[in-house]
Image (cartoon, rainbow, N blue to C red):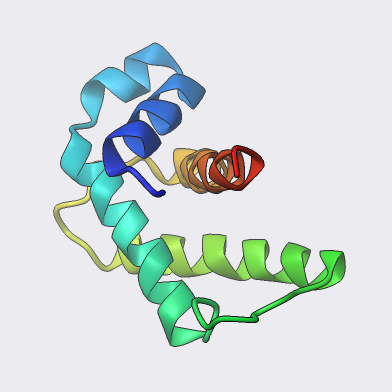
Length: 102
């Protein structure tokens, strides 16, 4: 089961300590919300939604682009643009770890 606190801890662990220390949990929750909005908008939360490895690569690049776009519109975002890829990939890694535990 998805746990935001564990997801945030996982994301923090993937970032350099000096960047992680500058960002509060709300910044990471915002990214998580953007990711799940993307999933919902693209039908990726539907039961039986399967994708191939090629689709997965396209989804990840589309997701990262979407998160960058949304954060660029957010005047309150404190996330340095160069760390968005790492944050999104860490969140996806957390999602994968949930499925590995099933």
